[in-house]
Length: 344
Ligand SMILES: Nc1ncnc2c1ncn2[C@@H]1O[C@H](COP(=O)(O)OP(=O)(O)OP(=O)(O)O)[C@@H](O)[C@H]1O
Image 1 (cartoon, rainbow, N blue to C red):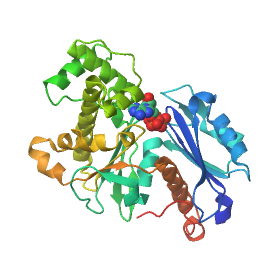
Image 2 (cartoon, rainbow, N blue to C red):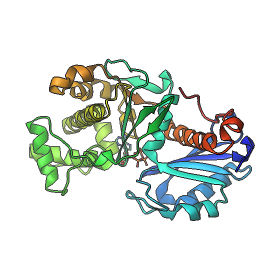
Image 3 (cartoon, protein in one colour):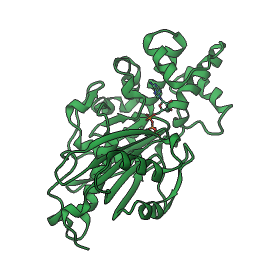
């Protein structure tokens, strides 16, 4: 079906994590995202209510096209979130919201789509290395869970990866890490990377440090562990944060090797961007390069922390733009107005 560019607006974009749902609007072709709002998922029975709350607050004409990333694998029409109670049918959601087009994609697939649109001010480089153009790019991020994705170049474009890399098996790099993993294995049947590299994982890692050191663990939240670690107020929290960064270095390097990510590795999610200078000084980068015969290969690969405030929304906007361009008549009739930031 042919359509005019304005038929795809207003566009609603979203980024639904295990804890927070973020939304924004693109009202017309060529306009930037506006009215960004973050809502706690726990306050709503499902995405329909959260989106209705958002659109009632922002006012204006009803959105016609919508895309959101969600922290879940997408396999068919029914989505049941792993990290909280939301469960919904994509078709029913589209009908209830009276949308002409609805795209629900994995949140890290959406974030991967945003990467080419990020500018140097959106990124903080950690360590050396230089990106090679038109090579694969890696992406990982710890939040409520551990998201992993990437971009693989095809022709003039990229294909975003949709996998479940957060559930790979966590590997130890030394005897202390092996002891931590052995303790975690008494709690979980499978010690995946996400068991450590996430908000709940940071708490588990702190408890593992306490158990291995033979000292009592205080009942701290992930945010409390990181704030005490950043302030140097607790040696156990400092050690926990350093081990967290080291494990992230291991997993980021594994990802870079698997993808051949000479285009660089990006780090997003809700946790690392809050660690600031601590992360730059942490064992992350040394561990990233600590791969025996492949250390020199990894030393050439840059690693960046994403500091942009709403990169998932940029990715959802890119997903809509790609869908509009791919629709019959879209390339000639729709692709003029990006409604999101420039891509490569
Ligand atoms: N300052 C902090 N330090 C460490 N962990 C934190 C901090 N603030 C929040 N967290 C943890 O980060 C997680 C929330 O991450 P994020 O903001 O990415 O949410 P989300 O987008 O809903 O998550 P996701 O997309 O991973 O499901 C929670 O587990 C929380 O405990």
